Length: 189
View 1: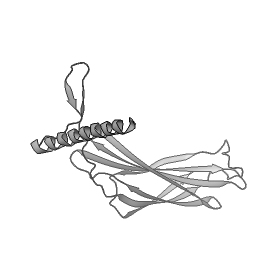
View 2: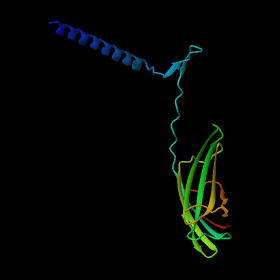
View 3: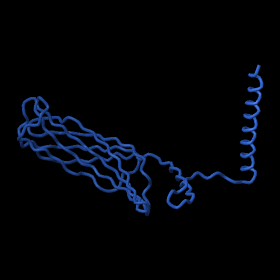
View 4: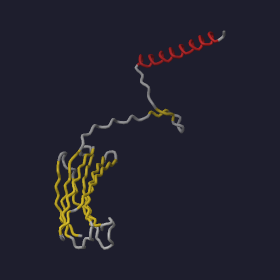
């Protein structure tokens, strides 16, 4: 039977390979050398180590709520069965001038208006929670909010004669965490 001698040789070879690998690993750790990941540059032939990514800084969420209360004067007649939808978009951005990187975050919300004669009221609540780095001499954070007012007929389609209203109502620094920013505006459509 030749199977037993072949199995014995295979086991011997595997043992030598494993022992050599363990010896090489222990030699690296005994001399204090660390392996460096990298690649060989095909143009220069030089070894180029891979850059180690800096660990992400643990950020606490910047969270709050924006409450926009709109009082809308209706100059264009609301179609029978029509609705008025108020929408709010919040945008935060963070620019790191040292690394020339910009990150941005967006939150949207909308609500149906309450219609009574030619005056309409609409309140939109927009909660937000973003992982924004703290402002510093190299990090510039900005915050803005815009609203829109849209009239539609009973089928949900905009009549061709209706004006669509849109404006910016917030601009500046991101409010402190936990803040409820209340804004009251008047608009005409």
